[in-house]
Amino acid sequence: MLRRLYDWVLHWAETPYGTWALFVLAFCESSFFPIPPDILLIALAVARPAKALNYALVCSAGSVLGGCLGYLIGWQFMAGLGYQIIEFYGLANKFDYIRSLYTAYDAWAIGIAGFTPIPYKVFTISAGAFNINFTVFLFASVISRSARFYLVGSLIYVFGPRIQAFIDRYFDILAISFTVLLVAGFVLIKFIFK
Image (cartoon, rainbow, N blue to C red; front, side, top):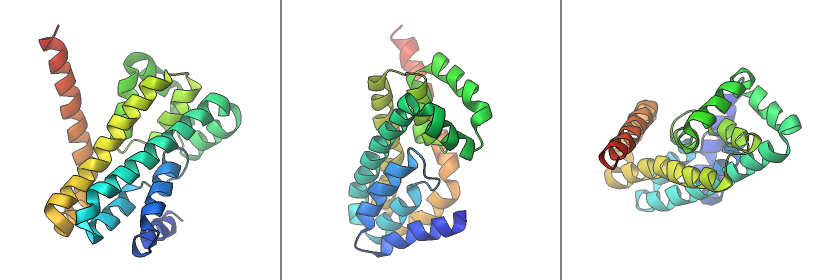
């Protein structure tokens, strides 16, 4: 079933509605849909590398707005819909662990989930359920989701279609490496300006 969804998402890159489909996919993925928008972003950007950064912007905007819907689901509808979504992804038993991440790391938890392959939707829903400060949530979402999609868009913009295989193969490693460097940078700044 996931393969059919994946193929269905990719087919939008070959239609005149690709940009709108990217926005809708990014929106839905941030709150409930299982297929990440990266695949459509890559397909659209590879087809038109000059527009890669525009596609990254569309993807970022859709994702952040979808994250706000996820927050709303957790904040107002956790008992019904929120738990069903989290259970669908097999993460109901990790809910208390996610709470501890928010308690310990606050914005870092959403920032890291927003950039890495961790299911972002689980963190958006959890943020609402745990009443995380919405401004902090929104700021961390904008930074992390934009960083993720602009990284992909920038690589395609600079290197063109030949970078697609590299991104497809090493996306998880690139995301984790960038996150480690990002966290290390903030830790270094914290110690320098202590």
